[in-house]
Image (tube, rainbow, N blue to C red; front, side, top):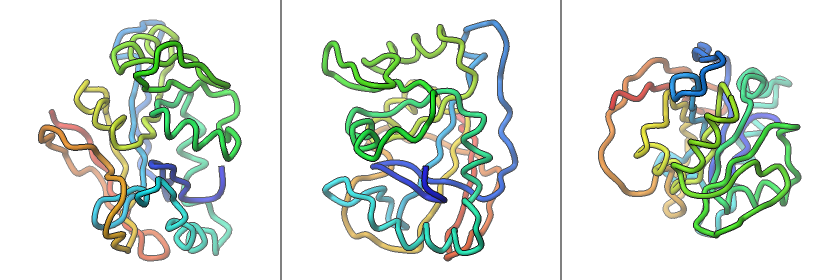
Length: 206
């Protein structure tokens, strides 16, 4: 993955983070898996332009890389052992070349029998949750996009959410979360990043 913020209708990286607790153990129940969000969005709540492109993130990547850093992405990704994403996000990532080494991908899709490189399972959110927990993963990155993040949120799968607010107003585009019910969050940390980026960490209250 490139330094700092790389997003597909989805992602972002971080500076140093208070590390989230990683649940582990032989039990494959919900409590053995930690689901985390990690995403960049504009101040007006968009993660990509109307076409799904994320070129708007380039200047912020460059700002984070000026000192040779990666915005904390390396520290974040090393504990991730699987990724949950929508089909559009998966196909966009594959267009770049899968940057997640041998980590398993789980793809949210309505398309029956969907397969692809690095795809361990595909289907609806409950099928993916079952596959993830039976595979024994310990920390899963819910990458997005907005429909996937909403589905995971509604399914109670988020434990922690890290959002990077980019100092720009896109005006229109793909939202960070698709419309849905209100969910309350608890603020756990705030940090300023280079380039005027604001990093905000939340836990999910309900």
